[in-house]
Length: 214
Image (cartoon, rainbow, N blue to C red; front, side):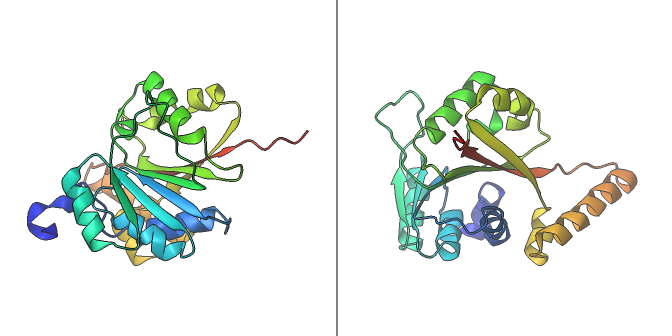
């Protein structure tokens, strides 16, 4: 039960604004197949299917209950119960687009070694023009942002681009990315000044292969 379980504190059940922004940032690249890692109840995978209508969408999560719910509710997508394991060399992900929305433990760790392992695992088989898209709380000491510059240097054959995301409620109300981000910045300043409260910033990181220009 969505309301009584308070599952929306762990799953974004209204991810449309976020997925639409990702599609715009990818500039209408041809996407044939999508993998949503840490898919939870499947709401983001379903929104990916609604947005990239011609693509097949697969979600993967370690929770059997979440995967059972997703398979029952979102039949247009495929859901698997499994863990993302960088040490499992038989686990191969050949997709045009891989999305990771607050994917644990990857987006809740400050371990450089863990970040390297997961990025290697998720990017080694993406298509030439494919992308890994990560969405997460950015200014958290246990996050990718801690190692972001070092990771860019480490992965010399990958291109990293990061983009601000609006506050969730503002993003839902105002679908225009630039306007919603401007309103979010104003809201952040108001909260910090009057309430002495920082609600944190969110970012999208898009990682692609560096095209060979030789």
